[in-house]
Image (tube, rainbow, N blue to C red; front, side, top):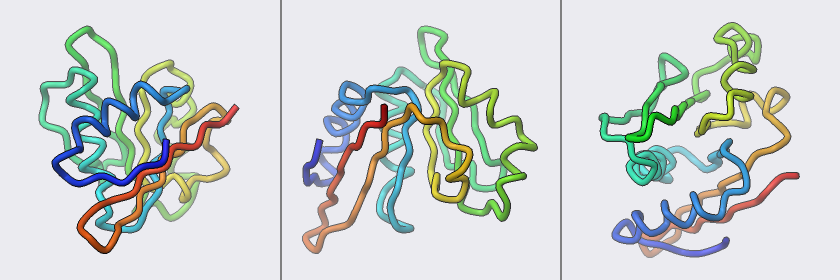
Length: 138
């Protein structure tokens, strides 16, 4: 998947991400303000989460539950200073739980990421549009 989109297309983009992801671990790459959290919120809606979703900037992880009882973990590793901090929250238990794991700033824990994941690269274009590229692992 490689496409440009506007904010009005976000719902359809979220649906495409879910249907095209080969793994439940989604790694969101992009500069600050490119729309990672906004896309994650829309993905959460599409997965059936009715709770208010927000970026877990200070807590590192938020847990949500879908309408059918599935768990979704939303991580934000922007403020992490050492990968050891991720170990301290039990990152392996989250990553290998078979739950959806939506990870902002995965480059900050590069050595801990599961091999089976889908990379989502976001970039901002000049015309108030975004570009999204999905890259599948294994």
